[in-house]
Image (cartoon, rainbow, N blue to C red):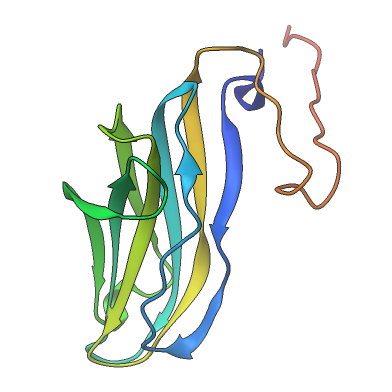
Length: 144
């Protein structure tokens, strides 16, 4: 069994150049899944800059509200080139997204991936919109 048979991966936030803009990611429809892991890649943080990724949810994919306790933050240059991860299991509402906040000083952000998991129907299919090329799954011989 492959991990890619159990999850659905989607790029929900493209890379952002050095700056302090605060964009929201694309939303993820949780219908048919129990959980989603958001993985954000922080680039270079200038001086005392911060990068925070918070999860929001919505019943109708239009009016989003913060999900209490669902956030991660990178503080200052020491956290450059690290990951932010927020795992949400069984959100109350059907749609979830991330809200990014870059503050105090400029920061580079390399993007966010959403991994939906615990699908009610397996194997899951990766969408062509998420993949640059066909998914490759390789089975190696058992070690002796």
